[in-house]
Image 1 (spheres, each protein chain N blue to C red):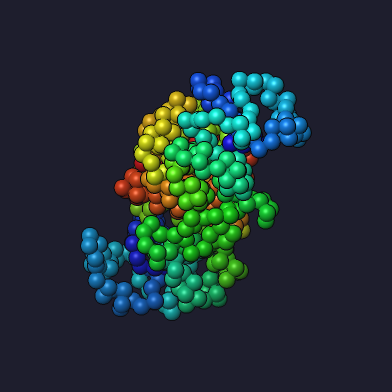
Image 2: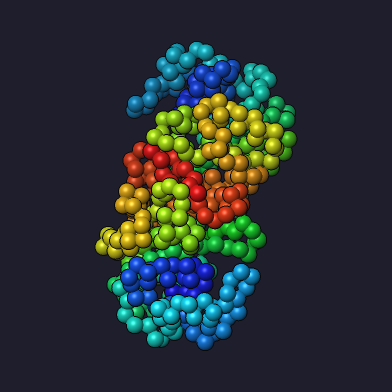
Length: 219
Length: 219
């Protein structure tokens, strides 16, 4: 779900791990004609090199084992509503998005936090979907490539369905996350913790001048 | 400042590092007669073993090079107001407290977050004090004993005064924090990051079943 920077990072990697991947967009033609900016090539140019990925309008989506929410946080609810609860029913939805609010300038604040989270909002709006919050604690190029860092670091899963978390954990392990560095924080309310980590993440980004970092839990 | 669990952990350690330490309380007699609870001895019993630490009412406080806010977050402003801006003027105040709100049960939420922080509130209320947010990211027994963990981890400083941050960094290094693991996040607004880390910290505490952990930043 989504065709932005995050989707363009993780979709090819999930395909590389042996899965069939479809990029879901609301308007294929618009996505393919979207211009590039700065160092980023246009989606159309990028897509020419990634023809192993399908690109589909929401109405064309086939059945899937797993959905990945890689839309912009602010646009997530509209996007999910456009797909519809019926399509997502009973499925695992990995929510890798953060509720970042850039409307007050940089660094961003969060448009939901403290006693709620975007993960919970999605779960409440789609009670029959198995939402698993994960991977939202790091930059897209590291999400499924933890080996790019100098030493082992930690990733989290939050969700109400043990079965869905198992499925996500399996994908994470396939991508190189070590089992003992994948922490299951508990139910979907624990997404509050990983989403609010962003408040420290954005300050670390400012200090380190690179998004290529992660936290490791040390005991 | 304070005579609770945090103060009882760090005050003896700061004394051990060679500093004269006074525990500041609003009512010595009340503090000394406060009963213990559970595994915690009463303050009076504890104090018998720590007679190298002075205990003083706020009116008796002498001059100090550095103040440490180890009061309860909710009580911080009242406590600082009781000491008074004149006493604190020009001094370094290490704020190790978190704005934890237990009124809605466990785990706690934060009574200030997102676009503000307790560190900033103190700085705004006492503009002539040099507030340095630090050490609030870990449990009291680890604050000045980082060697208790199995490997190096990270600690942060946030504040507007470079001079005051230098003074705090020096104390941290004395306590065993390695220079390259002390991250200066920037001005006092960056306290939002370390205070909101608590949202993840409380969930990790739930998962790990011990507060004896910290984060390490991995690049």
